Image (cartoon, rainbow, N blue to C red):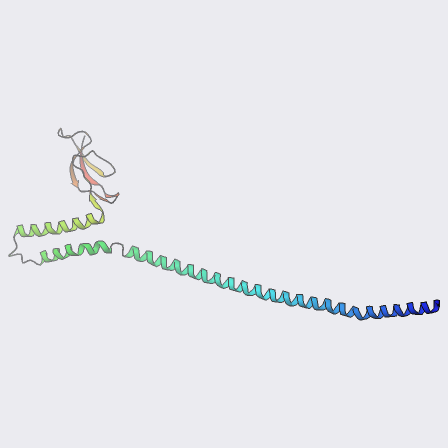
Length: 191
């Protein structure tokens, strides 16, 4: 019986050995299949990430091109704005220019000094009106306290009719454009 037992044990060992040998390639095949599947998954992930990267690069290039176009357009608009900034004022002055041309076209033999003076006064009022609409104002001087920000003293006089440091006479008008003095008034100041 012990021989039989040993024989059975040997057969069992052989069967186990056969089973192990048969299963080893299966495990290797599963391992190889898992590695191949992971490789395929990784390759697909790499392709997906490369496509995303390419899409982001394209979007970045489009945005950079848009910004460059916007800068160019903005620069062009600013150049045009500077170039044509005075167009509105020039258009407003055209009627005064037309009146000057009409005055110059008058026959000198028939024109009187009074009619010429009236024409010049009319043109003057038109020009002043345009300047006022644009924000130009004459600086008030005579009888005002001397202000070095808006007045330029060219002479000093003694006049008992005015207080000290008061503008007595305006030699040339000064002008202020909105809140900026563009030409100070030339004045005589009482000392």
